[in-house]
Image 1: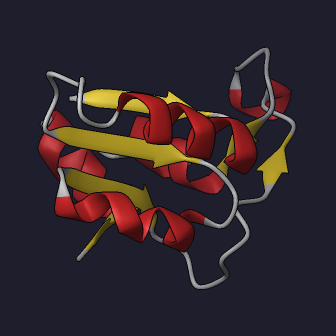
Image 2: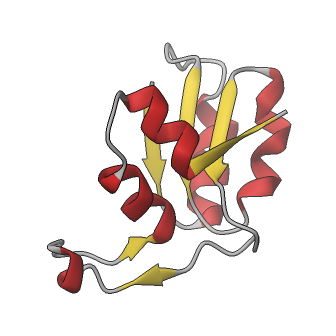
Amino acid sequence: MLFITGHTNFVWEYMLSHIHQLPERRVVITSCFGNIFKKFSRDCEIYVPNFCQDLCQLRSGIPYGFQFDISDAELCFYNTPGTIEKRIHAAYKQLL
């Protein structure tokens, strides 16, 4: 499993360059405009933030105990109990 967090254009370029070299078959992407990564779902399982709007907004992580800006998907992931798989399914959606 590979977790990638970053601006859409950087994540897009990374995926274009590396998708066929990734040993991981499950990729969890935290980035704005997650639905554009659907193209890569032919090659592996792609998960993006599971929220109604396409824009993955960031908020200050300080009130939540983090020293970096954090997305709602990441907050949900970190605060959901259970296995990593359960937490991914709570905070992210698989692009099919």
